[in-house]
Image 1 (spheres, helix red, strand yellow):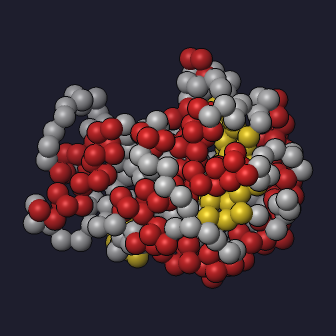
Image 2 (tube, protein in one colour):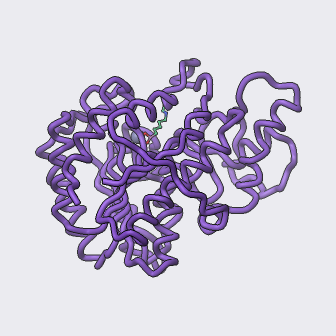
Length: 336
Ligand code: OKP
Ligand code: ZN
């Protein structure tokens, strides 16, 4: 299995996040990626430039990500840039220059700070996903693993949130689609619903999106991922949400995975982009499913049995001491 990672992805290191009304240490730490890289040997990514990123994200959002931290500091602020006011209650779509106004315009939560190296790390995280895709396209690899960090599945065309800034899986899916590798399916198996990916492809008939995740009536991100969200316009029917209750273990999970797999194949997919989060682990500190390390191997075997070229894109997983071994257990099922 070809594995890709760029050490510049480690430089994104927000100090703290707002969690249940209090400040706590940022969960999405650089040591997550170090732990995974320590278990699976990785090669550095290539640079495919900004164009594949701009094929998914809006130009003004990219400009904001590139300058937000500097603007925050030049306004005399300490620490990392954090939003606190959001234009959600039918406010006008104003283009304002004040850093706080922009932070609210381009964020949907207050738990995803912008630190000094955030743009660079997010840029290289996206390039890592594109490098994994390139290994499948150019070298005919059956599978590739992109050790993306920061993760991406909560980021939309013009918004950040949930520790995500650039949507690595969506950028790879769009690139694959544009390169004629489709039909493309994105399957998201992170504990949390991949709202950003869903929004990006919601009206797209050609890029199928399926997600297995904690029921959003109980868990983050709450406002997306309910079973009745099935796509809109031309994309009606090309989104599948399979929410599961807290406490879900392998038997119930496996049934949902089979359902998702049937839908992916019914779409006629020729390429699978897998948003893989290891936060479905029983020991995850912020999640509530009950998968074991052996279940991750079972999950990998099930997905590998579909025999689709598969780009595995890393999303969440916060049990840092187990994370690398859980990811390795999952990847062990994908033999070339
Ligand atoms: C990202 B990924 C507030 C608690 C919730 C957001 C969880 C983001 C999960 N600090 N924070 O899908 O693993
Ligand atoms: Zn997650």
